[in-house]
Length: 349
Image 1 (cartoon, rainbow, N blue to C red):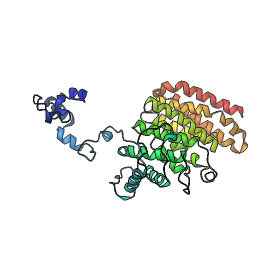
Image 2 (cartoon, rainbow, N blue to C red):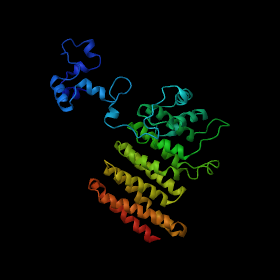
Image 3 (spheres, rainbow, N blue to C red):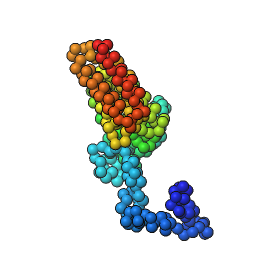
Image 4 (cartoon, rainbow, N blue to C red):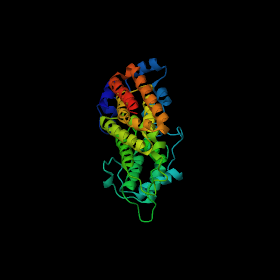
């Protein structure tokens, strides 16, 4: 704030919260910006400061919503643009029930799900309802609690007589939607949840309904991990580890060709984006190279040989696209290494 006040030509004592009103008698009476700054702003924009502020998106409390101004809002679901519930209704009741049923569940990142307090089936249902709602930056704390409730429900046994939680593609997609949060704690919690669910062994009652859960949720999960890799170094490392774990689970549930094809599509989307990041593309290509040897076994089966060849072609195409994009120069070496691994997998068949 001091730096911003200096650049705007404003005395910091005037803009510091409460200071101008409670004890800065010597501070100059400048409530917003200097006259020179206001004049320059009018010349640049053609309107005054008050008119410009009125055109900015608001946050509902009379302040400018800088998250939307600088396009930092998280990716929303199909209901993008819809107004969030105001505390009533089904979603509002679900949030209230969730907080009441699990008052001890922390709203912060917990690395080991085993230390989370036990939850009930009612709390799990409320958490799933919250995660199934629209992804909003303002609800990150509630989303964090919901993710921790889901992690606890799968780690611990629910109350006697309750149906144990099941891994579904809808649940995986909802959790994946929180991986790219601008809040590192929520992003890490969602990534840990995906890792724990991918490493989890299915129970007898789940095998029938969850046999395609990871296959159906592969692309949203891969895309979420790549999106999370744009965050801090710690989040990026966790995202890469989660991406590998999820890719291995998809390969186990279906085969390597499915994992390679879906991951290649997500890498291609990142590489062709408006602002691609070489580090993110490089992480995806690294995992792609680790999956390549598994294509040999898939191609050896005559029934799945076509799927393997299609996956190899998709992976080779994304490597070529990366090498053709000079913005992604730091990822060139990884693209070459990944492309070199693909023919080896093809020849091994």
